[in-house]
Amino acid sequence: MKKVLTLLVPCLVFAAAVLWWTRGDAGASSDATRPSSAALDTTSPTLASLQATPQAQAHRDRQHFEADAKDFFARAASLGAVERSERADALTRQIDAYEAAGGLSAGEALLLRTALVKATVDDPARQVEEVAAIADRYRNHADRRMAAFAAQQANDPRFQAYKTREAQVVAEVMAMTSVPAGLTRDQYLRQRLQEERERAYAP
Image (cartoon, rainbow, N blue to C red; front, top):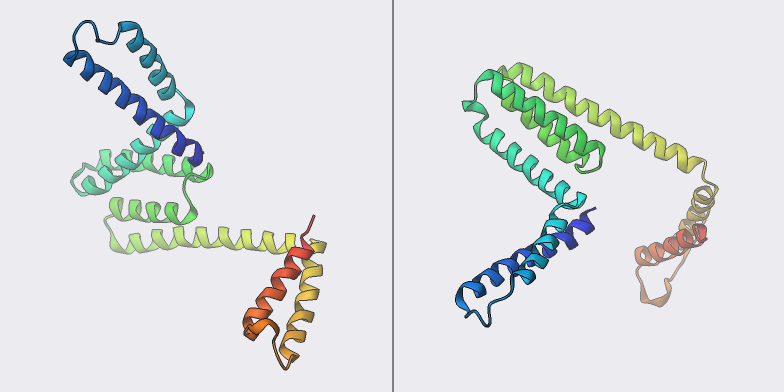
């Protein structure tokens, strides 16, 4: 999606620039050289169609989310309790959605959730408790993912074959009295292990 947006945004900017430039020429040129209304009508639907794409809408939504979050954190202390709570709840729902969709990393979401606690909880002791609870939740989630990955690797015959060869290669290299190709021992070991990984996972 980021790649699509990277391509789309310059197109939007270019289309907008074309519209602006065409309008400027229309005011400065004579009737004989002024672009026809048909030419302008051709450009406008193009810009409208670009702006109507799901990618463009998602980009605008993300910009709105980031601007809203920035505004909230800047003004949270001056907001009334009800408005502050409502806006914090809305931001929490957006953080949930972006994190679930991969639009926010775990680290980014953790920082935002921590900032929300500090912006909405006045009691310092309760702040510490809630931030610790959030950190524990993310730590447990990371531990579960690591455990799942380790279990997957343990059941992968290619990984097991590589680990067997890894131990053998390390023993061989450490026992060598000289290292070929003018490399250091560590460099040669990394080279050999990379070759073993490529061999183990070759299609």
